[in-house]
Length: 612
Image 1 (tube, rainbow, N blue to C red):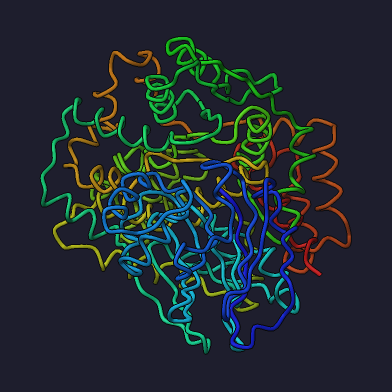
Image 2 (image 1 turned 180 degrees about the vertical axis):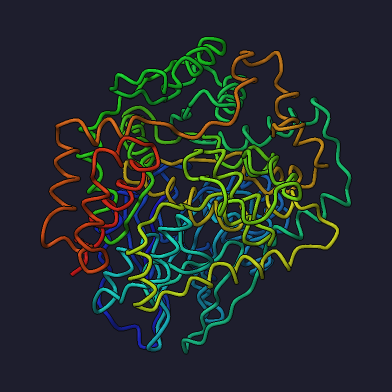
Protein backbone atom coordinates (compact mmCIF):
# COMPACT_ATOMS: atom_id res chain seq x y z
CA UNK A 1 0.00 0.00 0.00
CA UNK A 2 1.26 3.41 -0.91
CA UNK A 3 0.26 6.91 -1.90
CA UNK A 4 -0.11 8.39 -5.37
CA UNK A 5 -0.41 11.95 -6.61
CA UNK A 6 -0.13 13.51 -10.03
CA UNK A 7 -1.00 15.98 -12.71
CA UNK A 8 -2.17 15.41 -16.30
CA UNK A 9 -1.76 18.48 -18.48
CA UNK A 10 -1.27 18.92 -22.19
CA UNK A 11 1.46 21.51 -21.67
CA UNK A 12 3.26 19.37 -19.04
CA UNK A 13 3.79 22.51 -16.96
CA UNK A 14 3.58 23.03 -13.21
CA UNK A 15 6.81 21.96 -11.57
CA UNK A 16 7.67 19.00 -9.37
CA UNK A 17 5.14 17.31 -7.08
CA UNK A 18 5.22 17.70 -3.30
CA UNK A 19 5.46 14.09 -2.16
CA UNK A 20 5.77 15.08 1.51
CA UNK A 21 1.97 15.48 1.57
CA UNK A 22 1.60 11.67 1.29
CA UNK A 23 4.85 10.52 2.92
CA UNK A 24 2.97 8.78 5.77
CA UNK A 25 1.35 6.50 3.19
CA UNK A 26 4.74 5.34 1.94
CA UNK A 27 7.80 6.04 4.08
CA UNK A 28 10.03 3.42 2.43
CA UNK A 29 10.65 4.98 -0.99
CA UNK A 30 9.42 7.71 -3.32
CA UNK A 31 9.66 8.83 -6.91
CA UNK A 32 8.08 10.90 -9.67
CA UNK A 33 8.30 10.82 -13.43
CA UNK A 34 6.98 12.80 -16.37
CA UNK A 35 5.47 10.53 -19.02
CA UNK A 36 4.03 12.52 -21.89
CA UNK A 37 1.27 14.71 -20.48
CA UNK A 38 1.26 12.94 -17.11
CA UNK A 39 3.44 13.64 -14.09
CA UNK A 40 3.17 10.61 -11.81
CA UNK A 41 4.19 10.74 -8.13
CA UNK A 42 4.49 7.92 -5.64
CA UNK A 43 5.44 7.09 -2.04
CA UNK A 44 5.98 3.43 -1.16
CA UNK A 45 5.14 1.19 1.75
CA UNK A 46 7.07 -1.91 0.68
CA UNK A 47 5.00 -5.11 1.01
CA UNK A 48 5.70 -7.35 -2.01
CA UNK A 49 9.02 -7.73 -3.88
CA UNK A 50 10.81 -5.44 -1.47
CA UNK A 51 13.85 -4.98 -3.69
CA UNK A 52 12.22 -4.87 -7.11
CA UNK A 53 8.90 -3.06 -6.84
CA UNK A 54 10.02 0.57 -7.06
CA UNK A 55 7.62 3.02 -8.71
CA UNK A 56 6.91 4.75 -11.00
CA UNK A 57 7.40 1.50 -12.91
CA UNK A 58 7.69 1.15 -16.67
CA UNK A 59 7.03 -2.10 -18.54
CA UNK A 60 10.04 -3.86 -20.08
CA UNK A 61 8.92 -2.88 -23.57
CA UNK A 62 8.42 0.76 -22.56
CA UNK A 63 4.72 0.63 -23.41
CA UNK A 64 3.33 2.03 -20.15
CA UNK A 65 4.32 3.53 -16.81
CA UNK A 66 2.31 3.16 -13.60
CA UNK A 67 1.95 4.38 -10.02
CA UNK A 68 -0.25 2.10 -7.95
CA UNK A 69 -1.63 2.08 -4.40
CA UNK A 70 -2.82 -1.28 -3.09
CA UNK A 71 -2.21 -4.99 -3.54
CA UNK A 72 -3.14 -7.55 -6.20
CA UNK A 73 -3.75 -10.92 -4.56
CA UNK A 74 -3.93 -13.03 -7.72
CA UNK A 75 -0.81 -11.56 -9.29
CA UNK A 76 0.94 -14.92 -9.33
CA UNK A 77 -1.86 -16.58 -11.28
CA UNK A 78 -2.08 -13.66 -13.70
CA UNK A 79 1.69 -13.65 -14.12
CA UNK A 80 1.58 -17.28 -15.21
CA UNK A 81 -1.07 -16.48 -17.80
CA UNK A 82 0.88 -13.47 -19.08
CA UNK A 83 4.11 -15.47 -19.15
CA UNK A 84 2.41 -17.98 -21.41
CA UNK A 85 1.48 -15.11 -23.74
CA UNK A 86 5.09 -13.97 -23.91
CA UNK A 87 4.91 -10.88 -21.72
CA UNK A 88 8.39 -10.04 -20.39
CA UNK A 89 8.79 -9.50 -16.63
CA UNK A 90 11.82 -8.01 -14.93
CA UNK A 91 10.52 -7.94 -11.31
CA UNK A 92 8.51 -10.20 -9.01
CA UNK A 93 6.04 -7.45 -8.10
CA UNK A 94 2.29 -7.29 -8.43
CA UNK A 95 2.72 -3.82 -9.93
CA UNK A 96 4.31 -5.22 -13.06
CA UNK A 97 1.43 -7.67 -13.43
CA UNK A 98 -0.98 -4.74 -13.68
CA UNK A 99 1.14 -3.32 -16.48
CA UNK A 100 1.02 -6.70 -18.21
CA UNK A 101 -2.75 -7.02 -17.81
CA UNK A 102 -3.35 -3.55 -19.22
CA UNK A 103 -0.95 -3.89 -22.15
CA UNK A 104 -2.41 -7.30 -23.01
CA UNK A 105 -6.15 -6.76 -22.49
CA UNK A 106 -6.58 -2.99 -22.22
CA UNK A 107 -8.76 -1.31 -19.59
CA UNK A 108 -10.92 -4.48 -19.55
CA UNK A 109 -7.89 -6.29 -18.12
CA UNK A 110 -8.37 -4.43 -14.85
CA UNK A 111 -11.47 -6.56 -14.23
CA UNK A 112 -9.15 -9.57 -13.90
CA UNK A 113 -7.37 -8.07 -10.91
CA UNK A 114 -8.28 -9.53 -7.55
CA UNK A 115 -7.32 -6.97 -5.00
CA UNK A 116 -7.58 -3.40 -3.77
CA UNK A 117 -6.12 -0.58 -5.77
CA UNK A 118 -6.13 2.93 -7.10
CA UNK A 119 -3.76 3.63 -9.94
CA UNK A 120 -2.57 6.03 -12.60
CA UNK A 121 -1.15 4.49 -15.76
CA UNK A 122 0.41 6.47 -18.60
CA UNK A 123 0.07 4.63 -21.92
CA UNK A 124 3.11 5.65 -23.96
CA UNK A 125 1.58 4.12 -27.12
CA UNK A 126 -1.59 6.22 -27.20
CA UNK A 127 -0.51 9.10 -25.00
CA UNK A 128 -3.56 8.49 -22.78
CA UNK A 129 -3.47 8.34 -19.00
CA UNK A 130 -5.79 5.95 -17.14
CA UNK A 131 -6.97 6.51 -13.57
CA UNK A 132 -8.77 3.54 -12.02
CA UNK A 133 -10.15 2.30 -8.69
CA UNK A 134 -10.95 -1.21 -7.48
CA UNK A 135 -14.57 -2.49 -7.72
CA UNK A 136 -15.27 -2.12 -3.98
CA UNK A 137 -13.61 1.27 -3.54
CA UNK A 138 -11.25 -0.08 -0.89
CA UNK A 139 -8.50 2.31 -1.94
CA UNK A 140 -9.34 6.00 -2.40
CA UNK A 141 -8.66 8.17 -5.43
CA UNK A 142 -9.65 11.84 -5.56
CA UNK A 143 -9.44 14.05 -8.62
CA UNK A 144 -10.03 17.56 -9.92
CA UNK A 145 -10.87 18.22 -13.54
CA UNK A 146 -10.71 21.65 -15.14
CA UNK A 147 -8.66 24.28 -16.95
CA UNK A 148 -7.31 21.68 -19.38
CA UNK A 149 -5.83 19.45 -16.70
CA UNK A 150 -6.68 16.58 -14.37
CA UNK A 151 -5.16 16.41 -10.88
CA UNK A 152 -5.35 13.33 -8.67
CA UNK A 153 -4.22 12.04 -5.28
CA UNK A 154 -4.83 9.42 -2.63
CA UNK A 155 -5.93 12.12 -0.17
CA UNK A 156 -7.78 15.39 -0.56
CA UNK A 157 -5.16 17.48 1.24
CA UNK A 158 -2.48 16.32 -1.22
CA UNK A 159 -4.78 17.15 -4.12
CA UNK A 160 -5.57 20.60 -2.73
CA UNK A 161 -1.81 21.20 -2.63
CA UNK A 162 -1.83 21.00 -6.44
CA UNK A 163 -4.53 23.66 -6.74
CA UNK A 164 -4.13 27.42 -6.53
CA UNK A 165 -6.03 27.48 -3.25
CA UNK A 166 -8.52 25.64 -1.09
CA UNK A 167 -11.78 25.09 -3.04
CA UNK A 168 -15.13 26.30 -1.79
CA UNK A 169 -16.86 24.00 0.69
CA UNK A 170 -19.67 21.87 -0.73
CA UNK A 171 -22.38 22.61 1.82
CA UNK A 172 -24.55 19.76 0.58
CA UNK A 173 -21.68 17.38 1.36
CA UNK A 174 -21.31 18.88 4.84
CA UNK A 175 -25.05 18.38 5.36
CA UNK A 176 -24.78 14.76 4.16
CA UNK A 177 -21.79 14.14 6.42
CA UNK A 178 -23.72 15.39 9.44
CA UNK A 179 -26.94 13.59 8.56
CA UNK A 180 -25.78 10.42 6.77
CA UNK A 181 -22.16 10.35 8.03
CA UNK A 182 -20.58 10.75 4.58
CA UNK A 183 -20.99 12.62 1.27
CA UNK A 184 -23.09 10.64 -1.21
CA UNK A 185 -21.88 9.34 -4.58
CA UNK A 186 -18.73 10.85 -6.06
CA UNK A 187 -18.96 14.05 -4.01
CA UNK A 188 -16.50 15.29 -1.39
CA UNK A 189 -16.51 18.16 1.09
CA UNK A 190 -15.02 20.45 -1.56
CA UNK A 191 -16.59 21.73 -4.75
CA UNK A 192 -14.61 20.62 -7.78
CA UNK A 193 -12.99 17.67 -6.02
CA UNK A 194 -14.55 14.29 -6.76
CA UNK A 195 -13.82 10.74 -5.78
CA UNK A 196 -13.44 8.26 -8.62
CA UNK A 197 -16.24 5.73 -8.29
CA UNK A 198 -15.43 2.05 -7.69
CA UNK A 199 -14.85 -0.10 -10.75
CA UNK A 200 -14.49 2.94 -13.02
CA UNK A 201 -11.58 4.03 -15.20
CA UNK A 202 -11.12 7.67 -16.15
CA UNK A 203 -9.23 7.92 -19.44
CA UNK A 204 -7.54 11.24 -20.20
CA UNK A 205 -6.36 11.99 -23.73
CA UNK A 206 -3.11 13.90 -24.43
CA UNK A 207 -5.26 16.95 -25.18
CA UNK A 208 -7.03 16.69 -21.82
CA UNK A 209 -10.32 15.20 -23.02
CA UNK A 210 -11.88 12.83 -20.48
CA UNK A 211 -14.05 9.77 -20.87
CA UNK A 212 -15.10 7.17 -18.31
CA UNK A 213 -15.45 3.44 -18.61
CA UNK A 214 -16.90 1.03 -16.06
CA UNK A 215 -14.75 -2.09 -16.14
CA UNK A 216 -16.33 -3.89 -13.18
CA UNK A 217 -19.94 -4.00 -11.94
CA UNK A 218 -20.98 -5.44 -8.60
CA UNK A 219 -24.52 -5.88 -9.89
CA UNK A 220 -23.34 -7.94 -12.84
CA UNK A 221 -21.03 -10.01 -10.63
CA UNK A 222 -23.93 -10.81 -8.27
CA UNK A 223 -26.10 -11.79 -11.24
CA UNK A 224 -23.45 -14.21 -12.48
CA UNK A 225 -23.30 -15.85 -9.06
CA UNK A 226 -27.10 -16.07 -8.81
CA UNK A 227 -27.24 -17.90 -12.12
CA UNK A 228 -24.39 -20.20 -11.13
CA UNK A 229 -26.31 -21.43 -8.06
CA UNK A 230 -23.19 -22.16 -6.00
CA UNK A 231 -23.16 -24.20 -2.78
CA UNK A 232 -23.55 -22.52 0.59
CA UNK A 233 -23.33 -25.44 3.03
CA UNK A 234 -20.92 -24.96 5.97
CA UNK A 235 -18.08 -26.71 4.15
CA UNK A 236 -18.48 -24.50 1.09
CA UNK A 237 -18.54 -21.35 3.24
CA UNK A 238 -15.33 -22.39 4.99
CA UNK A 239 -13.68 -23.11 1.65
CA UNK A 240 -14.56 -19.65 0.38
CA UNK A 241 -13.32 -17.97 3.56
CA UNK A 242 -10.10 -20.00 3.50
CA UNK A 243 -9.44 -18.99 -0.09
CA UNK A 244 -9.95 -15.27 0.38
CA UNK A 245 -7.95 -15.10 3.64
CA UNK A 246 -5.09 -17.08 2.10
CA UNK A 247 -4.92 -14.68 -0.84
CA UNK A 248 -5.11 -11.65 1.43
CA UNK A 249 -2.26 -13.01 3.55
CA UNK A 250 0.27 -12.87 0.68
CA UNK A 251 3.10 -10.58 1.77
CA UNK A 252 6.87 -10.41 2.04
CA UNK A 253 6.66 -8.64 5.41
CA UNK A 254 5.18 -9.50 8.84
CA UNK A 255 1.39 -9.28 9.11
CA UNK A 256 -1.23 -9.49 11.83
CA UNK A 257 -4.92 -8.80 12.33
CA UNK A 258 -7.35 -6.58 14.19
CA UNK A 259 -9.40 -8.64 16.64
CA UNK A 260 -12.44 -7.07 18.30
CA UNK A 261 -13.95 -10.33 19.49
CA UNK A 262 -16.85 -9.94 17.09
CA UNK A 263 -17.72 -12.75 14.69
CA UNK A 264 -16.13 -11.22 11.59
CA UNK A 265 -12.68 -10.39 12.96
CA UNK A 266 -12.66 -13.66 14.91
CA UNK A 267 -13.23 -15.68 11.72
CA UNK A 268 -10.39 -13.83 10.00
CA UNK A 269 -8.08 -14.43 12.96
CA UNK A 270 -9.05 -18.12 13.17
CA UNK A 271 -8.47 -18.64 9.44
CA UNK A 272 -5.19 -16.76 9.54
CA UNK A 273 -4.01 -18.98 12.38
CA UNK A 274 -4.61 -22.08 10.22
CA UNK A 275 -2.00 -20.97 7.68
CA UNK A 276 0.45 -19.05 9.87
CA UNK A 277 3.85 -20.57 10.70
CA UNK A 278 3.97 -18.75 14.04
CA UNK A 279 1.43 -17.28 16.47
CA UNK A 280 -0.71 -14.61 14.86
CA UNK A 281 -0.27 -11.10 16.21
CA UNK A 282 -3.76 -9.80 16.97
CA UNK A 283 -4.54 -6.24 18.10
CA UNK A 284 -7.50 -5.22 20.21
CA UNK A 285 -8.62 -2.03 21.94
CA UNK A 286 -9.24 -1.57 25.64
CA UNK A 287 -10.50 1.57 27.31
CA UNK A 288 -9.06 3.42 30.28
CA UNK A 289 -12.45 3.80 31.91
CA UNK A 290 -14.58 2.75 34.85
CA UNK A 291 -17.20 1.59 32.34
CA UNK A 292 -15.71 -1.90 32.08
CA UNK A 293 -18.98 -3.39 30.84
CA UNK A 294 -18.30 -1.72 27.49
CA UNK A 295 -15.15 -3.72 26.89
CA UNK A 296 -15.01 -6.36 24.16
CA UNK A 297 -11.71 -7.69 25.49
CA UNK A 298 -13.14 -10.86 27.10
CA UNK A 299 -14.31 -12.03 23.68
CA UNK A 300 -11.04 -11.12 21.99
CA UNK A 301 -9.08 -12.87 24.72
CA UNK A 302 -11.11 -16.05 24.40
CA UNK A 303 -10.56 -16.17 20.63
CA UNK A 304 -6.84 -15.44 20.98
CA UNK A 305 -6.47 -18.19 23.57
CA UNK A 306 -8.34 -20.72 21.42
CA UNK A 307 -6.28 -20.06 18.27
CA UNK A 308 -2.97 -19.53 20.06
CA UNK A 309 -2.62 -15.90 18.96
CA UNK A 310 -0.48 -13.27 20.63
CA UNK A 311 -3.01 -10.64 21.71
CA UNK A 312 -1.70 -7.10 21.98
CA UNK A 313 -4.14 -4.97 23.98
CA UNK A 314 -4.00 -1.27 23.12
CA UNK A 315 -5.36 1.01 25.83
CA UNK A 316 -7.22 4.12 24.66
CA UNK A 317 -8.06 7.02 26.97
CA UNK A 318 -9.63 10.43 26.86
CA UNK A 319 -6.13 11.90 26.73
CA UNK A 320 -5.53 9.93 23.51
CA UNK A 321 -8.71 11.41 22.06
CA UNK A 322 -7.50 14.92 22.84
CA UNK A 323 -4.08 14.20 21.34
CA UNK A 324 -5.24 12.40 18.18
CA UNK A 325 -8.45 14.26 17.25
CA UNK A 326 -6.57 17.18 15.62
CA UNK A 327 -4.49 14.69 13.62
CA UNK A 328 -7.67 13.19 12.18
CA UNK A 329 -10.09 16.07 11.84
CA UNK A 330 -7.90 19.14 12.09
CA UNK A 331 -6.58 18.93 8.53
CA UNK A 332 -7.90 19.47 5.01
CA UNK A 333 -8.61 15.72 4.91
CA UNK A 334 -11.15 15.98 7.76
CA UNK A 335 -13.49 15.85 9.47
CA UNK A 336 -13.69 12.29 10.81
CA UNK A 337 -16.71 12.51 13.12
CA UNK A 338 -16.92 8.87 14.22
CA UNK A 339 -15.19 8.49 17.62
CA UNK A 340 -14.19 4.92 16.74
CA UNK A 341 -11.63 6.38 14.31
CA UNK A 342 -9.49 7.69 17.16
CA UNK A 343 -9.34 4.22 18.69
CA UNK A 344 -8.51 2.78 15.27
CA UNK A 345 -5.67 5.27 14.83
CA UNK A 346 -4.22 4.47 18.27
CA UNK A 347 -4.43 0.73 17.52
CA UNK A 348 -2.86 1.23 14.09
CA UNK A 349 0.05 3.17 15.56
CA UNK A 350 0.65 0.30 17.99
CA UNK A 351 0.37 -2.40 15.32
CA UNK A 352 2.77 -0.56 13.02
CA UNK A 353 5.52 -1.12 15.58
CA UNK A 354 5.39 -4.87 14.83
CA UNK A 355 3.83 -5.44 11.40
CA UNK A 356 3.22 -3.70 8.10
CA UNK A 357 -0.06 -5.42 7.22
CA UNK A 358 -3.24 -6.21 9.17
CA UNK A 359 -6.31 -8.15 8.11
CA UNK A 360 -9.71 -7.06 9.43
CA UNK A 361 -13.36 -8.07 9.23
CA UNK A 362 -14.89 -5.12 7.35
CA UNK A 363 -17.40 -6.11 4.71
CA UNK A 364 -18.85 -9.20 6.39
CA UNK A 365 -21.87 -7.30 7.72
CA UNK A 366 -22.74 -6.16 4.22
CA UNK A 367 -21.92 -9.47 2.52
CA UNK A 368 -23.80 -11.67 5.03
CA UNK A 369 -26.50 -9.28 6.28
CA UNK A 370 -25.06 -8.73 9.74
CA UNK A 371 -26.62 -5.38 10.60
CA UNK A 372 -29.89 -5.63 12.57
CA UNK A 373 -31.58 -3.39 10.01
CA UNK A 374 -31.49 -6.20 7.46
CA UNK A 375 -33.64 -8.40 9.68
CA UNK A 376 -35.90 -5.60 10.92
CA UNK A 377 -36.64 -4.23 7.47
CA UNK A 378 -38.68 -7.31 6.59
CA UNK A 379 -41.30 -6.18 9.12
CA UNK A 380 -41.75 -2.63 7.86
CA UNK A 381 -45.23 -3.40 6.56
CA UNK A 382 -46.43 -4.05 10.11
CA UNK A 383 -45.37 -0.63 11.49
CA UNK A 384 -47.82 2.23 10.89
CA UNK A 385 -46.38 5.34 9.22
CA UNK A 386 -45.92 8.52 11.20
CA UNK A 387 -45.18 6.69 14.45
CA UNK A 388 -42.68 9.36 15.48
CA UNK A 389 -45.52 11.88 15.68
CA UNK A 390 -47.35 9.97 18.41
CA UNK A 391 -44.55 8.26 20.33
CA UNK A 392 -41.35 9.72 21.89
CA UNK A 393 -39.08 7.56 19.73
CA UNK A 394 -36.00 9.68 20.46
CA UNK A 395 -36.16 8.46 24.08
CA UNK A 396 -36.21 4.78 23.13
CA UNK A 397 -32.57 4.51 21.98
CA UNK A 398 -31.88 1.95 19.28
CA UNK A 399 -35.45 0.67 19.41
CA UNK A 400 -36.65 4.19 18.62
CA UNK A 401 -34.30 4.44 15.64
CA UNK A 402 -35.62 1.12 14.33
CA UNK A 403 -39.27 2.08 14.78
CA UNK A 404 -38.73 5.46 13.14
CA UNK A 405 -37.10 3.81 10.11
CA UNK A 406 -39.73 1.07 9.89
CA UNK A 407 -42.47 3.68 9.99
CA UNK A 408 -41.17 5.19 6.74
CA UNK A 409 -43.27 3.75 3.90
CA UNK A 410 -40.99 4.97 1.10
CA UNK A 411 -38.35 2.29 0.64
CA UNK A 412 -35.57 4.68 -0.36
CA UNK A 413 -36.11 6.94 2.64
CA UNK A 414 -36.44 3.96 4.98
CA UNK A 415 -33.12 2.49 3.92
CA UNK A 416 -31.44 5.86 4.36
CA UNK A 417 -32.90 6.23 7.87
CA UNK A 418 -31.11 3.26 9.37
CA UNK A 419 -27.66 4.85 9.60
CA UNK A 420 -28.61 8.49 9.69
CA UNK A 421 -27.89 10.86 12.56
CA UNK A 422 -31.20 12.30 13.76
CA UNK A 423 -29.59 14.52 16.39
CA UNK A 424 -27.99 17.21 14.23
CA UNK A 425 -28.85 20.64 15.71
CA UNK A 426 -31.73 22.16 13.81
CA UNK A 427 -30.05 25.54 13.57
CA UNK A 428 -27.00 23.98 11.91
CA UNK A 429 -29.16 22.20 9.34
CA UNK A 430 -31.16 25.35 8.61
CA UNK A 431 -27.98 27.39 8.18
CA UNK A 432 -26.52 24.92 5.69
CA UNK A 433 -29.76 24.78 3.71
CA UNK A 434 -30.00 28.57 3.70
CA UNK A 435 -26.46 28.64 2.29
CA UNK A 436 -27.44 26.39 -0.61
CA UNK A 437 -27.22 22.81 0.66
CA UNK A 438 -29.56 20.46 -1.22
CA UNK A 439 -31.06 17.81 1.08
CA UNK A 440 -32.64 15.94 -1.84
CA UNK A 441 -29.34 15.09 -3.54
CA UNK A 442 -28.69 12.05 -1.37
CA UNK A 443 -32.18 10.63 -1.75
CA UNK A 444 -32.08 11.09 -5.51
CA UNK A 445 -28.76 9.24 -5.75
CA UNK A 446 -30.01 6.35 -3.62
CA UNK A 447 -33.29 6.13 -5.54
CA UNK A 448 -31.43 5.96 -8.86
CA UNK A 449 -29.08 3.25 -7.59
CA UNK A 450 -31.90 1.10 -6.21
CA UNK A 451 -33.88 1.46 -9.45
CA UNK A 452 -30.91 0.09 -11.40
CA UNK A 453 -30.90 -3.26 -9.57
CA UNK A 454 -32.55 -6.29 -11.22
CA UNK A 455 -36.29 -6.55 -10.60
CA UNK A 456 -36.06 -10.12 -9.28
CA UNK A 457 -33.63 -9.28 -6.48
CA UNK A 458 -34.95 -9.47 -2.95
CA UNK A 459 -35.10 -6.29 -0.88
CA UNK A 460 -32.34 -7.77 1.26
CA UNK A 461 -30.02 -8.07 -1.73
CA UNK A 462 -30.83 -4.51 -2.76
CA UNK A 463 -30.00 -3.22 0.71
CA UNK A 464 -26.74 -5.17 0.78
CA UNK A 465 -25.53 -3.93 -2.59
CA UNK A 466 -26.60 -0.36 -1.78
CA UNK A 467 -24.46 -0.48 1.35
CA UNK A 468 -21.56 -1.94 -0.64
CA UNK A 469 -21.84 0.91 -3.13
CA UNK A 470 -22.37 3.79 -0.71
CA UNK A 471 -21.83 3.12 3.00
CA UNK A 472 -18.61 1.14 2.58
CA UNK A 473 -16.54 3.09 0.02
CA UNK A 474 -17.56 6.55 1.20
CA UNK A 475 -17.56 5.84 4.92
CA UNK A 476 -16.10 2.69 6.51
CA UNK A 477 -13.41 2.00 3.92
CA UNK A 478 -12.47 5.67 3.59
CA UNK A 479 -12.06 5.95 7.35
CA UNK A 480 -10.19 2.66 7.59
CA UNK A 481 -7.74 3.65 4.86
CA UNK A 482 -7.05 7.04 6.39
CA UNK A 483 -6.58 5.92 9.99
CA UNK A 484 -4.31 2.98 9.14
CA UNK A 485 -2.26 4.91 6.58
CA UNK A 486 -1.65 7.66 9.13
CA UNK A 487 0.36 4.95 10.87
CA UNK A 488 1.97 3.65 7.62
CA UNK A 489 0.02 0.42 8.06
CA UNK A 490 -1.75 -1.54 5.33
CA UNK A 491 -5.26 -2.78 6.14
CA UNK A 492 -6.68 -5.67 4.09
CA UNK A 493 -10.32 -6.73 4.05
CA UNK A 494 -10.77 -10.36 2.91
CA UNK A 495 -14.57 -10.24 3.10
CA UNK A 496 -14.44 -7.73 0.21
CA UNK A 497 -13.13 -9.81 -2.66
CA UNK A 498 -14.25 -10.28 -6.28
CA UNK A 499 -14.38 -14.07 -5.84
CA UNK A 500 -16.14 -13.95 -2.47
CA UNK A 501 -18.49 -10.99 -1.96
CA UNK A 502 -20.77 -11.39 -5.02
CA UNK A 503 -21.20 -15.05 -4.10
CA UNK A 504 -22.28 -14.10 -0.57
CA UNK A 505 -24.75 -11.48 -1.82
CA UNK A 506 -26.25 -14.02 -4.23
CA UNK A 507 -27.00 -16.53 -1.47
CA UNK A 508 -30.68 -17.08 -0.67
CA UNK A 509 -31.97 -14.76 2.04
CA UNK A 510 -32.53 -17.72 4.36
CA UNK A 511 -28.80 -18.50 4.26
CA UNK A 512 -28.07 -15.07 5.71
CA UNK A 513 -31.05 -14.27 7.94
CA UNK A 514 -32.68 -16.50 10.52
CA UNK A 515 -35.37 -14.74 12.54
CA UNK A 516 -33.75 -11.61 14.00
CA UNK A 517 -30.12 -12.56 13.39
CA UNK A 518 -27.88 -12.18 10.35
CA UNK A 519 -24.74 -13.97 9.15
CA UNK A 520 -26.43 -17.34 9.58
CA UNK A 521 -24.18 -19.10 7.06
CA UNK A 522 -21.03 -17.84 8.79
CA UNK A 523 -22.27 -18.89 12.23
CA UNK A 524 -23.05 -22.37 10.96
CA UNK A 525 -19.75 -22.72 9.16
CA UNK A 526 -17.62 -21.79 12.16
CA UNK A 527 -19.63 -23.49 14.90
CA UNK A 528 -17.21 -25.57 16.96
CA UNK A 529 -14.25 -23.57 15.74
CA UNK A 530 -14.82 -20.36 17.69
CA UNK A 531 -15.89 -19.88 21.31
CA UNK A 532 -19.68 -20.31 21.71
CA UNK A 533 -19.99 -16.85 23.28
CA UNK A 534 -18.52 -15.25 20.16
CA UNK A 535 -20.84 -17.19 17.86
CA UNK A 536 -23.86 -16.22 19.95
CA UNK A 537 -23.02 -12.51 20.24
CA UNK A 538 -25.52 -10.13 18.68
CA UNK A 539 -24.22 -7.43 16.39
CA UNK A 540 -22.72 -4.68 18.53
CA UNK A 541 -21.35 -1.36 17.40
CA UNK A 542 -17.98 -0.06 18.54
CA UNK A 543 -18.83 1.20 22.02
CA UNK A 544 -16.58 3.42 24.06
CA UNK A 545 -17.01 5.64 27.16
CA UNK A 546 -17.02 8.90 25.22
CA UNK A 547 -19.53 10.68 27.44
CA UNK A 548 -17.47 9.91 30.54
CA UNK A 549 -14.34 11.33 28.94
CA UNK A 550 -16.07 14.46 27.66
CA UNK A 551 -17.50 15.31 31.08
CA UNK A 552 -14.51 14.36 33.26
CA UNK A 553 -12.07 17.25 33.81
CA UNK A 554 -9.04 16.72 31.61
CA UNK A 555 -7.61 17.52 28.17
CA UNK A 556 -10.61 16.27 26.19
CA UNK A 557 -13.17 18.06 28.35
CA UNK A 558 -11.08 21.23 28.04
CA UNK A 559 -10.74 20.89 24.25
CA UNK A 560 -14.48 20.48 23.81
CA UNK A 561 -15.33 23.56 25.83
CA UNK A 562 -12.44 25.72 24.66
CA UNK A 563 -13.15 25.17 20.97
CA UNK A 564 -16.94 25.15 20.90
CA UNK A 565 -17.48 27.97 23.39
CA UNK A 566 -14.77 30.17 21.90
CA UNK A 567 -16.38 33.42 20.72
CA UNK A 568 -14.37 33.01 17.51
CA UNK A 569 -15.43 29.42 16.89
CA UNK A 570 -15.80 28.77 13.17
CA UNK A 571 -19.17 27.14 13.81
CA UNK A 572 -20.53 30.47 15.04
CA UNK A 573 -21.27 31.17 11.40
CA UNK A 574 -23.59 28.14 11.30
CA UNK A 575 -24.87 27.74 14.88
CA UNK A 576 -25.92 30.28 17.46
CA UNK A 577 -24.35 30.53 20.90
CA UNK A 578 -27.20 28.78 22.71
CA UNK A 579 -27.00 25.74 20.42
CA UNK A 580 -23.27 25.37 21.01
CA UNK A 581 -23.80 25.66 24.76
CA UNK A 582 -26.49 23.00 24.48
CA UNK A 583 -24.10 20.62 22.75
CA UNK A 584 -21.61 20.75 25.63
CA UNK A 585 -24.15 20.74 28.47
CA UNK A 586 -23.65 17.90 31.01
CA UNK A 587 -27.22 16.68 30.53
CA UNK A 588 -26.63 16.36 26.78
CA UNK A 589 -23.27 14.62 27.19
CA UNK A 590 -24.75 12.13 29.66
CA UNK A 591 -26.44 10.21 26.84
CA UNK A 592 -24.64 8.17 24.20
CA UNK A 593 -26.36 10.09 21.42
CA UNK A 594 -25.51 13.41 23.01
CA UNK A 595 -21.85 12.47 23.42
CA UNK A 596 -21.62 11.37 19.78
CA UNK A 597 -23.27 14.59 18.67
CA UNK A 598 -20.72 16.61 20.65
CA UNK A 599 -17.89 14.67 19.05
CA UNK A 600 -19.35 15.27 15.59
CA UNK A 601 -19.61 19.01 16.21
CA UNK A 602 -16.10 19.12 17.70
CA UNK A 603 -14.70 17.29 14.64
CA UNK A 604 -16.45 19.75 12.35
CA UNK A 605 -14.97 22.69 14.27
CA UNK A 606 -11.47 21.21 14.05
CA UNK A 607 -11.82 20.79 10.29
CA UNK A 608 -13.20 24.29 9.78
CA UNK A 609 -10.20 25.71 11.67
CA UNK A 610 -7.86 24.01 9.17
CA UNK A 611 -9.39 26.04 6.34
CA UNK A 612 -7.86 29.41 5.43
